[in-house]
Image (cartoon, rainbow, N blue to C red; front, side, top):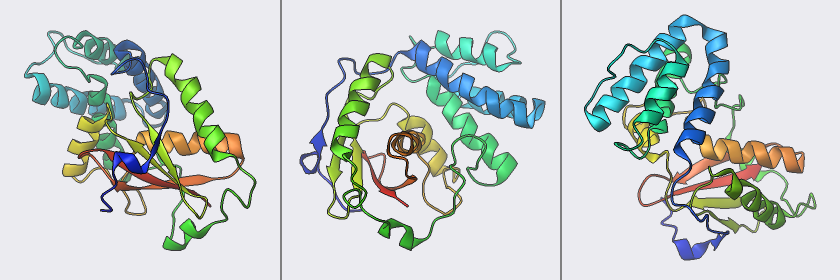
Length: 234
């Protein structure tokens, strides 16, 4: 790994809260996975709940008092754990890593994968300067717009590279416990062999929306002490 330092990045506005709103984020995560449930049916739901509860037992050492059969019931249970575990939504993220590997063998198109297979040469795409893109202004606005949602990370920064690509850093990530465990269990690989990151995937989708060009990422540092991704157009 490259050994990036926080001083290598321009830090954006800091969120006034350390962690996102637990209820809002848990609700958003579960609602997103409901669309996947429609594709795969009851088998998906059963497996998702099983792995989410396994994660919870690992973190807080308990099982739910009543049987959980639906994603809505799971959502309410996870929210109820907020006083015992600061990151209950991580149970759902970890469960998704498991079920997508079960159905597709690798993290796939069902929920987090953009669906492209990339080569090493893809990072040589035209720069943002060539395409007249104000990437700094875009990232500043992105940060300004996401902080009020109460689901932004506490800190986020970026580094603009000479070829027009960017590096994005999150000094801390509230999904780290889910992603790290999935990675350790061999569940976090994308189709091209790189490591999945739902946050960076979302960032690239946002960049595509506002620039009109496709973006992808490759994690270059992860988990300790921070996460850094190289983001580029193709």
